[in-house]
Length: 276
Ligand SMILES: [Zn+2]
Image (cartoon, rainbow, N blue to C red; front, side):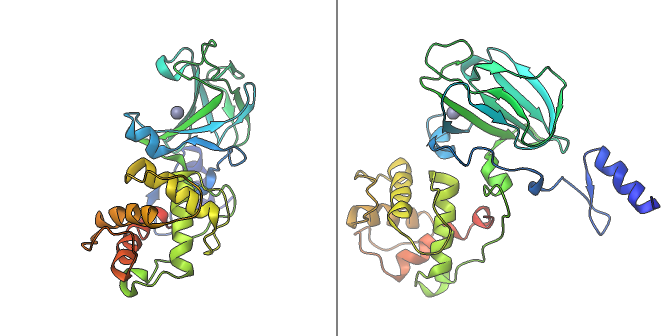
């Protein structure tokens, strides 16, 4: 083992990575994955925030479903953790923690070391069951806590893909006002991260893309119509209200023009939608 690899090994053992320029950086997000891609999101990150929660994502699944670790770490079990009910914490070596809530059963003792994918508990959440906390139906609540103690969206952190990953370029719609494939890929990635969209990031919006947009617009921008995947003037008026939060100053008339699209583009061009 070379001196350099000994240094690297020591750094890895201490839970940090040393970049090529000698910078100390957190372990990469690629060390984590989304273990719940197969389950529908019934309550997304912003839905939690907008009702006063510190944040989380709820995945629907039957009671007793094994919960895989999203990354390696050590286990801390917190029985009857208030509204969260039985809660398992994975303490990751880079200082981040993830928590799974409303468990029906713990599987591992405190201090157990696990790798990504290890089953750390069984899901619960049935109303009134021991360990469910305030949950009213079977699901797993998942969130991440950064090293300074702030809850963050684990899908933002890991890029949500759970395999492969990648980066989207910024869309030029911000300057030309014409939505194209890159714009729509970023829209699809936005609704994947914030609104439970599980379809492809292919730049070709279909009913599932529009339905996810409508769910988000209903939760945050006053859209009152159905999430039917068929956008009309009410959907576009809500989208213009979103655009207005990002520099659009035109009318809220449900008719998208270049300036409306530019506002939406400024929203989807945020760095947090770069990673797929
Ligand atoms: Zn929740």
